[in-house]
Amino acid sequence: MEMTKVRFEGSDINRKLLMGHPSGLFVLFFTEMWERFSYYGMRAILVLFLTSSIIDGGWAWSREEALGLYGTYTMLVYFSPILGGLLADKYLGYRKAVAIGAFIMTSGHAAMALDTPWSLYLGIGLLVAGNGLFKPNITSIINGVYKNAQDKKDGAFTIFYMGVNAGAFLGILLCGYIGEMVGWHYGFGLAGVFMFFGMLQFWFSQKIFGRIGLSPSDSLEYDDAIETKSEDPVVEEEVVPANVQRDRYIVVGILAFFTIFFWAAFEQAGGSMTIFAADYTDRVLEGNAANIFRVANTLLTVVPLLIITYVLWQLFRITFSKYALSNIFLGTSFVIIWGIVIWMLKNQFSEVETEVPASWFSILNSFYIIAFAPLVSKIWESKYNPPATVKFGLGLVLLGLGFGVLAYGSAGIPQGAQTASVSIMWLILAYLLHTLGELSLSPVGLSYVSKLVPAAKIGLMFGLWYIAVGLGNKAAGTMGGMIDKITAQYDLTTFFLIFTIVPIIAGLIVMGLTPVMKKLMHGVK
Image (cartoon, rainbow, N blue to C red; front, side):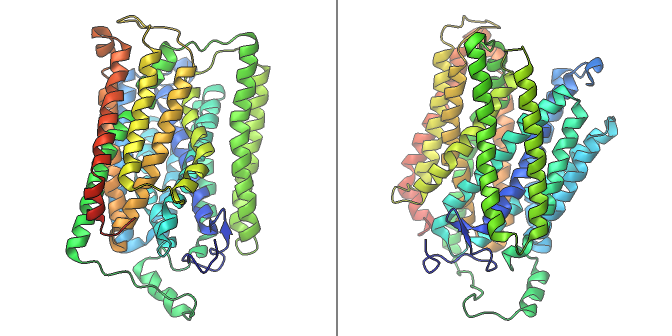
């Protein structure tokens, strides 16, 4: 796409394109990637650590106690962004908020690397606080970059989402492996190492965004320090009539409402789907099947990392001359990652054990996103780009179909059974459908919030959006906890059918609202 057709905000370096998008998007891509590495890496081993016996290095908590702490933590993680967004909107600016949040989270991981109760609680508190500053405001910077390129936003957020899931994939894989094989606190510490690298990478390249994301006072200083060039004018935000903005807020509220339904079902991945993997799936592989799994697992690890490394190299080519220190920190982090991956795969090929870990299935979501995000991004930028409500509806329907696959796969399991051995293919297919649904809904939701909300309120509204996600997570825990009761009274198929029917109905309803929602958007596409 020629520069005359779309003008991205930020510095001249930012306007040099990578995959059709400004290079600054990929600075944010890698910053978010390492933050998600730290979050999902820590989350993957927290409950395992708390419930492990003292002789295995854990604290021997009951499952109820461990899941209680875990549930409180994940809820607060999604609630804290509303305060962080408000602070950034009014005082800090988005860039300072991201940097401070990253530093606080790095400190939190460092605290968790210590083996004491006080350091665990301190670490969790710091992670919640840092996340509140980081999470809503990094997406607000994307909004600034695409201020005058609204048609590219859906694609931009989908690429950004690929970074989110690259971090999640690597975090779960590597922190989980090191936590279980070497020591729990080494896993917690590894999460902090890459949070630290992400912080430095962002801090030393933030000038690529020009005046985007500065606090009100810093923005004035920036304007005084440079002469406004004729080819880079400061664009005034469109004045939106109060009644129009009210309607657009209603749209955000409706989309947030349906988002709760999505995450209430999708987050079964951390609960009932993990139980299904552990207790009802045949994970013991022998002979050729075991060898196929080892090769597939290697490809599953190496191919996405090669793709991300290629993106890294392309970013280096554009930004190294201007932001060398940032690139050095980013490159060092990848050298470390490749070293750990090679060491892990070497160990796995030397092991005799052929049982697929139950936690392994959780990386499929991230792998599928890395694989399919570029394709979905291109569709959203093409003439086949559907309205927001159709994307949301499609996401919910695909999610429901994924649970339909699990309902069908568990049809032969007797009522009240505590164990079974169904094929692993049902989970692999379910995760594929769930991921395609997530790509249709989650990054698109972030994009439409940024389109429908005035710039002065964007941090706050992203915070409110994440509250909806948090409510969905809380509902997921409550509903997933009913698996034993429903399985005993009916069967496992009935349990999964609930998560099949409800999302599909919700998806059809939101698609049916398309004409009304279009009117309420007042021209936003």
